[in-house]
Image (cartoon, rainbow, N blue to C red; front, side):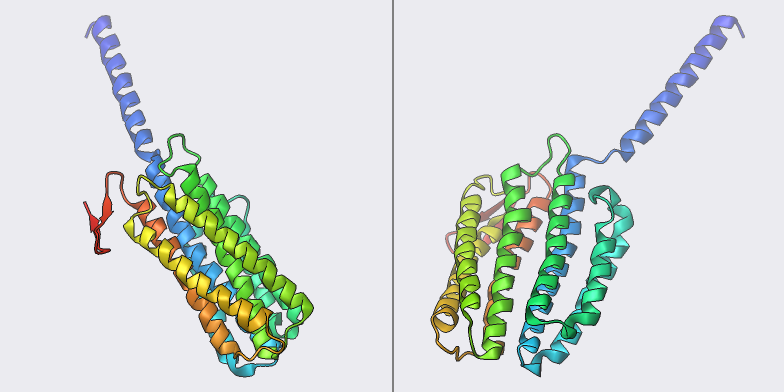
Length: 305
């Protein structure tokens, strides 16, 4: 073999090796759409964790205000929270690049301390401790959303991402706080001046949150959220308005509230469920492959194409 042939053979081998390396490396590069779907999946689990901790806060408020009928439900809810934390722990190794630091470890540690001390705290201590833990989950949802959208040309517009992973969870948390405070008031059968102020503040915040939600939904002209989400947004408005009327008439305006804690807790939970259905349907809409389209017929049916 001549020197030229040897040179060409070596050159060809290097080129082929380079192409093979480039091909393998390209196979490992995650597309913006795939990264986005991974973030949506993680935030779906965090959403469930958030919902369970919010319910635990409300149940603890009822018990600490003198109604022991929720003791068994509180214990069961602790099991739900532990289950969701285990699911998150299983997903953590594949999601480290979407986390800043080690937030899940702190959430797990703080939750365990709260779980053990839940019924040894005062009403205000319980509310503050639960709310601080919930803020950690909210921050983690926002971080995951941001980090899963960092790719240039990411598939989720900022306005929709902001509405879904920041504004909507904030609205849910305002409702969760109103559920916890109102449930405690109903359990105690009395409302203090401070409770009236706090509830009135939350009612105003919730109404502002509803307006922001509707504005964001109306801007979704490309129907990225999907037809089901747009239908859910209308139901959120109706359900939450009904709850706000109950808060104003049965709790804020009442001299001595004559409303059972179970009745109010159930009504507030129903409103929150509708908000979370919107969250889930909008998340599913954004996770659908590009090119998937939905339309809503005149009879309200959702059609896909």
